[in-house]
Length: 458
Image (tube, rainbow, N blue to C red; front, side, top):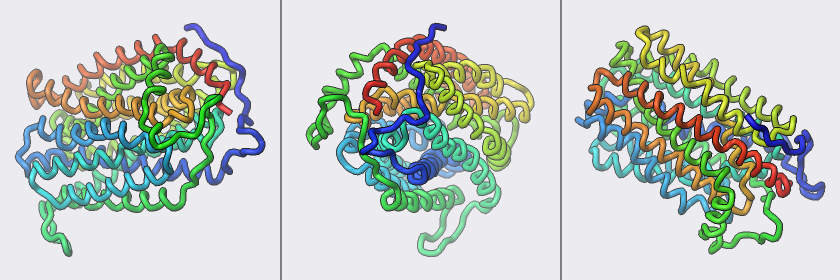
């Protein structure tokens, strides 16, 4: 595999002396808060997967309807709304955009807890998509102005530990909640009688509301840096102009196209896997959602964060050796290494073997998560960072939206409800190798783009 080299990265990469980087304490506080934010954003999705069958039974939904309302609807809105909301991160306070979005998500979880009609639930989940629409671009843009380029992969990896804790703790807390909320209905002050799954959503609203306020009032908004030469401060009108964005993407298409397409492919597989995992264990191995949640939660909580941190460490080591495509190279390695586990977990006959393979699959995938985010940010100029991130996250959310429906369609129309294992194995068996191939084909172009970007990463 050919290597593209850049000048070795120093530990002391920094802005000019007159514009010092934020203090480590403020910088890592932001990482911690945003890691917790990722926990709330993705934790809701993981925890919801544990109560799908209860929701299906109460609302009399088909599996495709279930996938659309609780899996696809919010992601579709998020994908398109990000084009409207994310550009504001190049103009307005990024912490305000993130904080208000979290408050919207909190109120939408309250709405989900308080309604029972499927149509109204769909509307509430659609509105929830707006809450997360600006979060990713604003967060990535803010962190890229908080850490020097050589430190960014490690910061991204550390922040994404929140994703792994979200995965582990959501399953763990959700498992214990499902066990604890054994009574079908509960009568609570003010809101009255609720089903047990509605109580879960009521609980999920609390961290969104708290974190929204913390982001708005305690996180530092750093100085914007990394603008290309000759550019001026954006105006509100320019914030909504994608002309320069699409030109930049087109000029660097050999680097960006594999990153976009690879992400879409990965997320279709990931979205279907995450949404239907608890149902798979119920139907294939007879584990209740509470049992699966507790077992999988403990396994991921103890093991998965190490994969994220290892990925950030190895990418930083490669970058210091002058390997320009270091971030993307780690993505390829992780994508290739996880394939056997991604396919076998669904096919092995023993539930504990399945749990072991599924855990290893997640841990190995995690190795590429921080470098994948850092790879993208490292070749994007500040003045268009939020808008380009919005286009990248569009692919992420579309994959997450499509994935649950792909698996439910295969299960319903090809294999049958009791054979969901084959739907999961087939989706990974096709999409996994395809994603690795796409990323690998873009390695050299990414390295060249990274080397060019070093001129304005100061």
